[in-house]
Structure formats: C-alpha cells, structure tokens
Image 1 (cartoon, rainbow, N blue to C red):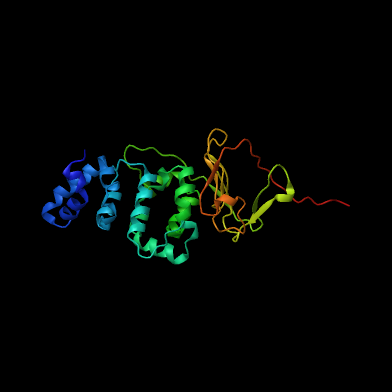
Image 2 (spheres, rainbow, N blue to C red):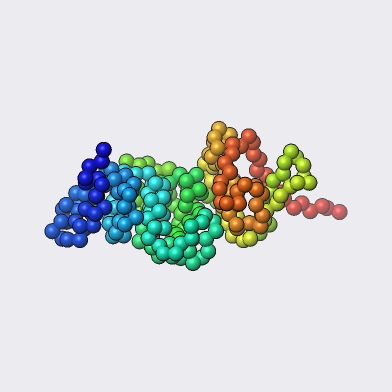
Length: 268
C-alpha cells in the first residue's frame, strides 16, 4: 500500500521547489526520486509535473532508471502537455505536430543519455520521433562520432555501463525498395519504394539491415522476434496488409543474406 507521500509526491515537489527555504528539502526529495523514480514517473498525476522539476530530475547522474524508460516517460509527458496533438500513430503526424512536441520538450531532449540506449530500442522507440531531436545532436548520435568523446557529450548515469550503439552506417539510396510475396509466387509480389532518398539503408555492428523506419532486423534475429516490419507512410505501398494502422508485425528470421550488385562492363 502506497504512503501519503508517494500518493502526493508531485504536489510536494511543486511546493518545495518554489521556495528557497525548502532548498535542502527539495534536494532530499530529488535524491529519493533518483533511488525510486517510479514514484514520480508512474504517478497518476505525472503529467501535471512542472517542467522545471522534470528537467532537474533529468540532470541528475544517479537516476536509477533505464534510459529508454526515461525517454518513454518524457515523450508521454510531452504529449500530455502539448495542445492539439492528434490521437493517432506518430507515423501519421505532420510537421506541425513534431514542431509542437519539440517546443514542449526542448529542454529535456538534450538531457537523455542516448549512448546508454540499445540499438533495438533506439530504432524502435526513438527513430519515430527523430524529428524532435536537434540536427546537430542527431548527427552526433547517428554518424558514429568518436567513442572517446562519449563521456563528454553524453555522460552516463551511475550504475549503468556503456553499450556501443553508435556504429551505424547510413546510405542514401534513391532506388531502394522492399518487397514481399507468398509461396515464391512472383505474381502476387508487393513492392514499396521510398518517397525520399535520404538515409534509406542502415547497418549496425549488433543488428541486421535496417530499411528506413519500415523494416528492421534485430539482434539474434534467429532466436527471437526482435525483428519487425511497420508501414510508416514514408513508402509508396504497404507490403503487409495488417500493418496499415501503424502496428508492428514482429517475426523471427530463419535466414537472411546481404550481397552487392555491381555493374560490370563487358570487353569487346
């Protein structure tokens, strides 16, 4: 059974953060939250939390919570504190929706320790919201910056360990496409081309190929259902009929092959 303090922690934080006299008490409450973050992040009134308090929590190096859970929580908070966001999958949002959410979370986004988020979680949870991440930060995250600078740019929270997830290589590909067909019957094949050539294909050291935000081959793909397909509206056609609502179709991979086709001139 939760205590009165746990039930009213958000209200308590609002009170102690407003007055200089409560500075030590405020710091004490923040320390308690860092040890038991669920008391705030899972509170019924979490969405009413003041932004300044949320930012103070994110700045701490001892917040005892997985970084992807922190990301999910600030996205939830951001949506709840941004007016007129559509109640539909993020894949169907327009540019104005992302701009509005970014404005709400502008102070929070740089405080996420992206280098402590796994490749699978990055592609699945963060990529759909990539438009709210500042361009310079996105370049640093996605372009494989020097690992010796990780501690300076994205410091870890105590108790966690580095997991190298930034060795992605991206390729622009205007002719890239994905396709599917049943029972080796080419007559019923479905093909989907991208509406953009930018960063269409990616590959990382610990996961398989990745096609924009639609097809992802996960880690240990032959042992679990870490791979998924999702129609993201960035491509011309849905190759899996049941994914139109934005749901992910998860699957286990029996085998996949990567090869390169090269043009070869014939000597006469």
